[in-house]
Length: 200
Image 1 (cartoon, one colour):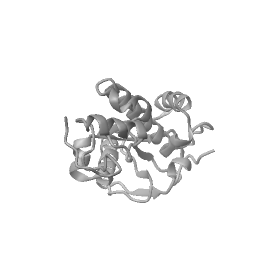
Image 2 (cartoon, rainbow, N blue to C red):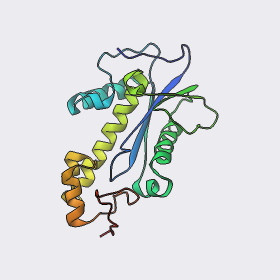
Image 3 (tube, one colour):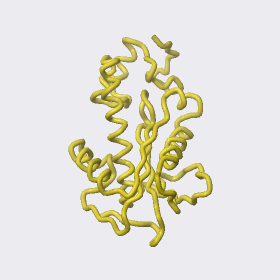
């Protein structure tokens, strides 16, 4: 089972993002404060869970968490400030929305931009080590999936309902045939040959 805390007796918020590697849509982030000594044997990195388990755990997290928040940075902002900074900004926005101020932020990954006056700890593969980061990864992932499923109906050619904006063959075929749309990240190489594409 994953660890319930990094530093005992500290109010910790786990933070993670979803959608960094996508060609379209926002990057989502979540921040989660779990109860002291919280335990959940099913909680794990969202990438290791199937959709059914993620959806079940989403409800569990929302019910059990002391506080949680979900935020996003859209594709236009991503193109302006780059995806790494957008990922940090999304996590900052999620922390902004927490009803309780954490004493320590647990960040999935090896880099982070300091948030105001709250210390942080970067943890490589933290979503597979700490419950609060795993919880954040599930909320970010499921929230982003919901969003991509909704905008799929606006632009079905890209098959976002299945690929969620990741660079699959079908998604790239849609871009090749139809061109990019208003949700695409124009600063990314949308096609392997990195052609200059215009919005339609």
